Image (tube, rainbow, N blue to C red; front, side, top):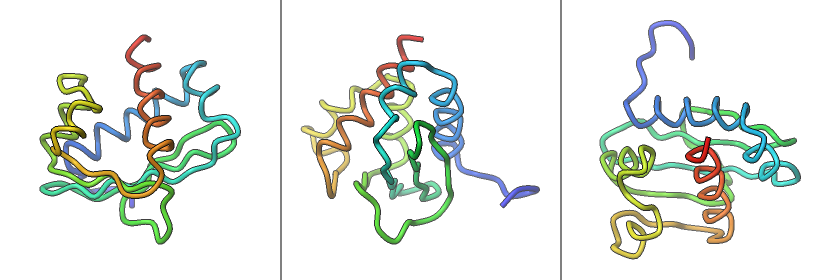
Length: 119
């Protein structure tokens, strides 16, 4: 899917998130031994999933047939969580997005984001 395919803003942001995670020692430590599929169903943007396997993450456009956890919500909510303008836990409890599947996997994915925010 290379070339002239233009991704949405949220998908592009999480693609950069994956690239940063693969360079961050704490994030790589969190991903080691944690092989999961984190699916994003985004209203107003591209659907995508992040796969963690062997201590590394990969970004994929589309919908995975059997994700570990699925996050569903509007593009603006995911964009604000990505930039840390919106706290993911507060947004979840305010019902700004939903989580289907493993809550512990969703929380661990959030810890990867926290590791990246620290640098």
